[in-house]
Amino acid sequence: MNQKPLSTAQILIMAATTGITIANVYYAQPILAQIAAAFGADATAIGRLPALTQAGVGIGLFFLAPLGDMLDRKMIVIVLELLLAVALAGMACSGSLLAAYACSLAIGVLAVAVQILVPMAAALSQPGAKGKTLGIVFTGTLTGILAARIFSGYIAQWLGWRWVYGLSAGLALAVALLVVVTLPRQHASPWRSDTGSYGALLASTVRQFGRFARLRRISCMGALVFGAFCSFWTTLTLLLSAAPFNYRSDQIGLFGLVAIGGAMVAPWFGRMADRASPERAQILTTALIVCGVLCVTLWPASLAAFVLATLLIDIGVQGTQVNNLAQLYALDETAHSRINTVFMTIFFLGGALGTFVGVLAWGAGGWPLVSVQLLVWSALAMVVAVLNHRASLATA
Image (cartoon, rainbow, N blue to C red; front, side, top):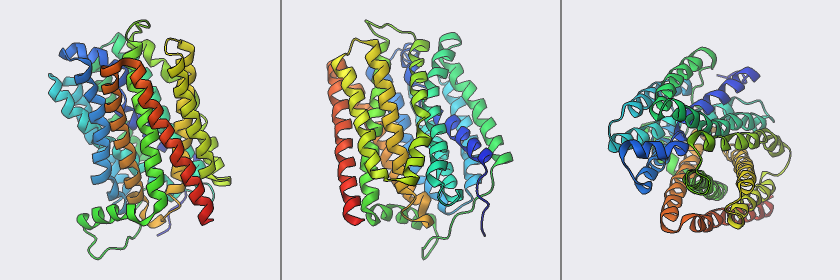
């Protein structure tokens, strides 16, 4: 049965829904110091919170996101949002660091609702406008990632960090209602399988990685870019809360305003992907990330350098990801969710690894060592972008 294409209002609602949902993965970053004080934890122990959330997203992507090719995507999103509200309430009430670890992992798993909505948006997009639609939805996603730091910073400063998660639980319930009222049901496309079972679905998901060389390349690039992104934001919090900056959590959260400005360019990159070569554009976007990292490597005590780096890194990450998605959803329209699962699982595992390595680098050598590993992440991403562009020219 043919589905009606998404209206502009529905696309904007999907963008808002993804932003509100994905924000939960990043609330902890600017308030790590407050959470650490509440549980008497050191920097290494508290740094595991965002890493566990990122790992949870990877787990949820592999085991839950493929269901979008089997079940009604709208119902999956509703169920995940309701369970997310429960996990957020548990985080708000957690009495120990171990309980916070468990809730952080669960929050990551359930926030995978975003990766049900993105293939849904791609499947319902009008022909020739897929990149534009994905650009708008991804703008919502990235705005949520970045606004999370502002929201959590201010709420934690004035009400306490537990209120961040309590209020977020209410937002998750509101999002579930919004999806019920506004979005269409979107049944899975038929997929080739002898059994149609959940096990066969997971096996088919794994096989997607071997089907497409392009998927392997952009998955690697996505993991490297997101690893740099997550490592930067986690260690930025640790740096800005210490001397010589000594910023409060609400002041650290203001860096999200700079990054949100960068998020506005995502639709532009989406339109570029519809009209031109997304592979070529990614050489530029990964170069922006390298330039941003160089700013904070060369001028580590300059506030202006960190503001500029924040803008460059976020524009680079957003542009790279929008162009990744434009290539991703052109591979096989009957396997959107499974292909998206492979890509986003690797993407978020890259983020978890970047967070983990960044925290280790901070503990072992401070910002100088953090800068080195950021340069490694971003330079490797640019190398993969060049290789992907050359491969696309060879197969053109």
